[in-house]
Image (cartoon, rainbow, N blue to C red):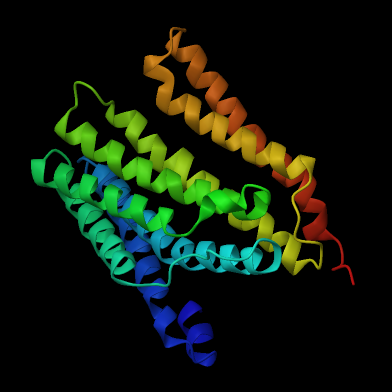
Amino acid sequence: MMAREIIAGKNRKDLIIVGLFTVFWASNLIFHVALAADTDPMTGLRLALVVAAVLISVIGGRVTPTFTRNWLTREAGAPFPSAFGWPDRTALALTAIAMLVWACFPRETMAGALLIAAGVMQTWRLLRWRGERTSAEPLVFILHVGYGWLAVALLALGCSVLLPQWVDGGAALHALTAGAIGVMTMGVMTRATLGHTGRKLAADGGTIAIYVLINLGAGLRICAHALPMDYVSILALSGMLWSAGFLLFAVKYGRYLLTPRVA
């Protein structure tokens, strides 16, 4: 279905998304086959996270600088996000390679080194987009925050491989899942819902509260080991905050999606 729509729209460069979702499907199959065969299913899980990281790199790497440029053009003027170039290509390639090596060989030194290199390039890529200039517009700024979580996750995963005594692997994994995936997903969902239902592209108090809850939940989860509090209690609080963000989205934005588009 995805390929049909992309081909009909004559936008064949987006066929890469079809390929990524095919890998996503395959990783799900690997996971369940491994469970049925009573072997380690984590390779399938890690492969799915490869797809998630690359999707954020590809799609987030398009919408974040584009929306930033549009907002700066209208509200603040130059300097604008840097044009797509070799730093972007390098960041994309390194992220895909590093995550794939990690998925297959999660404890190898090479995987850790590649993940850190990818994290450095993603950080540079993010800084080139001038996100600090969009703090006055949460709908744009949250995309930079979500992408920033990806850079943090890559660096943390790399450090958890090379320095496991210092960086907890579970915390690093949650920087990718609860952080990058959760925050970027929420940032795109809120903006897309407002735009496609004909509403003003502006974040009110409820939307900002959603962003704060998601980021607090993710932040608490990755810092759980370092905080001077009961570990299980911190995990519970983290999960409650993160889930509350999605619940608030369902309550606030669900009615937008269930009612007619405004004029």
